[in-house]
Image 1 (cartoon, rainbow, N blue to C red):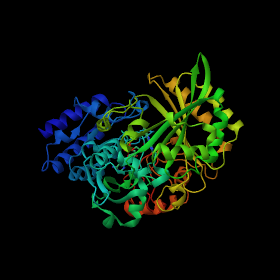
Image 2 (cartoon, protein in one colour):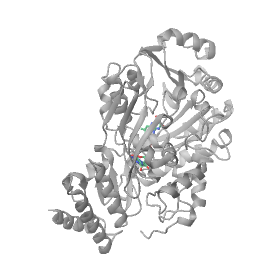
Image 3 (cartoon, helix red, strand yellow):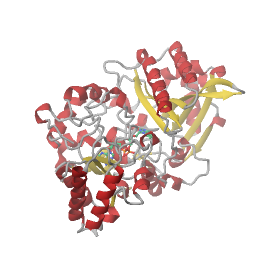
Image 4 (cartoon, helix red, strand yellow):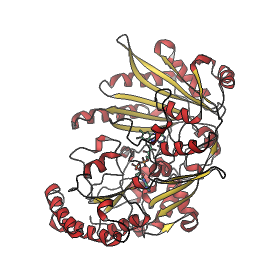
Length: 540
Ligand code: FDA
């Protein structure tokens, strides 16, 4: 049965991928499948774990957790095999066979990588898709949880709330984001001013390294454990699970969203927000969502002040009246609810929606997008904001959004080198620029939107951090630099994008990479390279 599977696979490879791979590489892939069958047969049937292009479920498996349709066109390179492990031995088999047969590996948890790095490669590659490894064990007594890497943050929030109304976790906002990529790149959300990032609250992890070894914190050592909490998992191995610290949340929290447009003083309010939001007490998070809207046929900019307060409305109102009276927040703007309900609120689910919706892994939007990030040290002056409005007006077809999240609180207390994520004290906000559009497979149109966001980014240069112009790894952006796309890695090239994501932590990450994966098996366009003496040119 296995050899039939492999022969069919060989025919399909030749049929579907005639341009890039010839007969000899097709044979390599057949050998790869034989290798997998050999290693996996003791534990399961290979057909349960492996999807090849001849399998009817191949495209649904590939596309299920693919968040950015920009990378699902017929021109996007496709994996030769998708492996969906049920057991750690399947991950080990995938690593060992990929190594033996010269395949690149892409590890996918939630599939939300902005540049599709978890499911696209220019080289013959396989995807290890962790969707079946997503159990969550919450230990209320010790305020911890073990989470497998294929879980989403929505599943994590739901499982915590199921056990306790007074525990939560400070990760991102969108529930379909996977914990494999999110925690290994940082992970911030509505509670990061109070508790820091998701990665700041990881206490143990299990990793399968390039040798196929299973390592917990003790076995991997503190350097590797440091690197995978913010340095991106994809450079160091396959993270199988995380142990996280759960944190107190009150029984009642308060949320509000106050919208102001340009006729309602939006520019002055946004300007003022920059002075106050990072100084609010750490229980209060007020982010800004900026976009163009139309009122009676006239375009204007809408600034939405979108907030979570870890406490009741009676405490929030005086606090806002004292610190930010200009916004004019009133009790009627506010809604009290439980923390888990606030997760639904931030995702704009209708009031009364059951939290079970957080278990749904289907992405909330299916629009193509390109994003970029910046960190701000000094308030952007009003005329700088006005220039941003002008550019937002220019993007007519797509949906352009700028999100500004306030820094301060716990984020300023953690040192730059505590974990690889270095963006701490000294910043007042993190900006995310996003442009969404319907993907019609029209390359020129996609390019038009991408060019727009690049122009906006260029315009923002004087107003944001410099030397380096800092960027957030989880808002992956290949414009800021890539490794050599022939598959070899240059330290000098990687240093360009590496210092933007990691500042001085980049060199320590290179040291760790050299220790844990000296032959650079785990690599992609923005993976950490080992030190030059260990570079190995790979021919595939
Ligand atoms: P995906 O599976 O695509 O992996 C991302 C990267 O991590 C890839 O390089 C992949 O190979 C690697 N990787 C994944 N699993 C791994 C594993 N088990 N071991 C080793 N490497 C692994 N961020 C944020 O901080 N706050 C937020 O609120 C949001 N909100 C948000 C909303 C939406 C709609 C999107 C698309 C993204 C966000 N993000 C975010 C960004 C998000 O944190 C980022 O894209 C994460 O890397 C996504 O992790 P996934 O596991 O989903 O991605």
